[in-house]
Image 1 (spheres, rainbow, N blue to C red):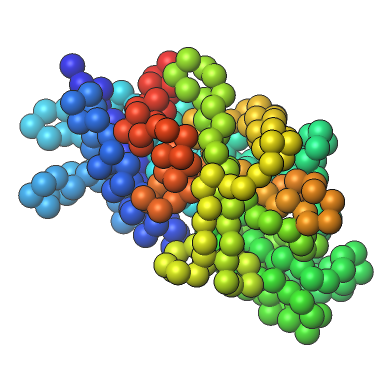
Image 2: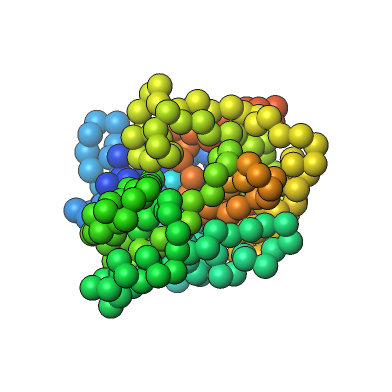
Length: 332
C-alpha cells in the first residue's frame, strides 16, 4: 500500500507564489510508485485539494482528512509552505495536536528560527561562528528607532523585518539619510510582526548551505552554494529574477573553510533542535576569514533553481531519493 502524503503548499503571505512553484517541483520528483501525493493548498480562503478535473475538495480540519469517494487520512505531511503558517510553527503545532507526522522542524524550532534576533541569541556562542553587531527593534521602539540605531551601530547597515522571508522589506543603508525609509519598509512588511533587525554590514563572500537528517538519523551536510549578485545585496529581485545572480555549486572553499563550515552548520542544526531539511546562510568575511551567521531557513525553496536542489544534485543524489529520505525520516 502506498504512503499517503499531504504536500502542504500556499500560505498567507506574498511568499505563496514561490511556495506553489516549490511544491510543484517536489510533486514532480516524488516517487509515485511509492507515494500517493495530494497537494493541499492552505490559503486564507480555505484548506483544500484540487483534483485533476479542477474540483475543489475542502480539508476536514478536525483530523486533516479528505472525503473523495470515501475518507482519506494521510500518513505524513510534506511541508513546502513558505512564510506563515508553514514556516513559523503554526501548522506544525496543529499537526502535533492531531498526531500527523511532518517533514519540517518542530513548532517550537520553527517559531524560534522565524525570529532572526532570537535565533542569533541562541547560536552566538557556537565555536568559530560569529554574528554581526545588531539592534532588535519592537513596535514600541518605532518612534525613536532612528536615534537608537545611530547611537549603537555604524554604517553601512542591513535593515530587515525580524520575522520575514524571501528578503521582503530588506534594505542596505549606506547613509543616515536613507535609514528612516528603510526602517519604515521593514516595520510595515506584511505579516512580519512589526519587529526590525538592524545589523552592521559584513564585507565578504555570501554562501548558503543545506543540511538534513536522513532516515537512519544521520546528519547529512550538502555542498555549499556561493551567491554572487549584481544587485547591492541578495534581495527579492536578485533571488527571483533570472540573470541578476550567479550561483556556484559547489562553492569554491578550501579544505579548512569547508571543514569549518560543515561543523558550524551541524552545530547550528543541533543547537536549534532542527528536523528535516534546513538551509543556513552565512558570510565569509574578507579580511578575517571568519564565518558570520545571516539566518536559517526551515522551509527552504524547492524550485529546480533553488539552492537545495542544486546542492542535492552536486552531492550526487537525485531529488527523488532526497525527498523520499525526508518522508521516511518523518515517518520514523
